[in-house]
Length: 246
Image (cartoon, rainbow, N blue to C red; front, side, top):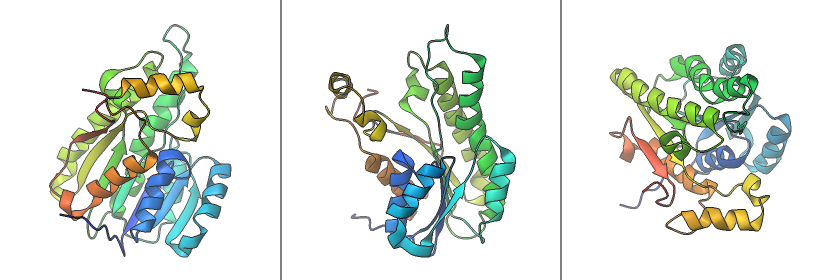
């Protein structure tokens, strides 16, 4: 079956949606006809995204949101006009250091954004899932499945995202809502573009498909999990990693 995504009349919220993977996800929803509210903490990124997505007009809205702060999430949620159908919890930060060098503040910051942020965002929006399809997609990471040197805080948060996903899939099923996670592997973003060539080559060499993924690969997975064709898929972790985790 050749799936043609058509989300006309539907509404999505994408956190961290003004840059990187989140931007690709937001743009993919918009291209499929969806109304999208982009939440991001960076005003500069929001301004740039607004310029790049200007052709979508009123179908896209922008909100400066700190997902680690429940009041900030509630304020943004109150501005949404009504029903939403898709929530992509993508916002995240890194504060990488080995455990011995990691400060408590670096632990707290990553957990607050990458784990507690999902709780605050979803709590603020849960009652807005009323009509039509109801999908929550949480962006985890292969680090959450297998760990990674220098990322105690990030790996713990992303593992927690997986546990949260599976619990919500059980709890929210009675309302007809599906909840899934996506675990990206090595994805080529503006951040990775600035890495030394030899580092990128080493990353690619670890991937059986011998290349980095694209933000659009994660966006495509989001569209599929949002579609009617995926309506019986819930509680899963979809690794999008070029077979890296095999």
